[in-house]
Image 1 (cartoon, rainbow, N blue to C red):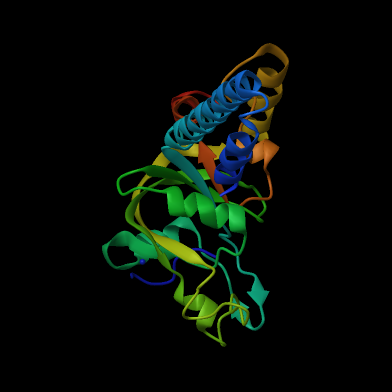
Image 2 (tube, rainbow, N blue to C red; image 1 turned 180 degrees about the horizontal axis):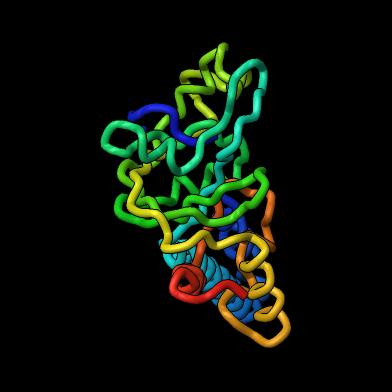
Length: 232
């Protein structure tokens, strides 16, 4: 749910074994030790490369798409409606993006940095799509709603000394020049999947259920450029 208020030792054993057997097959043991060293070096190198690749992958996501419901829907007696106009109406047009209860979506919010931009996406409504732009103004911190028994996103399994859920603060930037619908984005996604293009792997279609999604710079720029084009 979107913001409601402003807030955020086996190696040693091998060596001993080789030393004990050295008087019988010294040359073989030397070869084994050298081979083991090469194997360990290769394993370390692979781990380093993997970490580099993971970091590069994470660093490539500097833009986001965040979903919220602009139409009234009552859940446990509470209206969970929150559209881009509601964000604009908050003091300083800023609010906390609380209520995310999916681990992957939460982890994406934990990757967010101050100043990064996100599309405000209207979901679960008559016409879903991108309504505007906002920016991250506070990085991930504990989501207080997980401890509020009156909140629809209360999580009794989350403990104060080890909270499960996080949120970020976002600030309204502007409306897009026109509404960019899900239907239009899907047409481009299908085109790009068939012929190549920036939206072929867009998370909106490959990880559709996530309420917080990463965008590559190429995806973000392409989608934003659509506001200057006629809908297809």
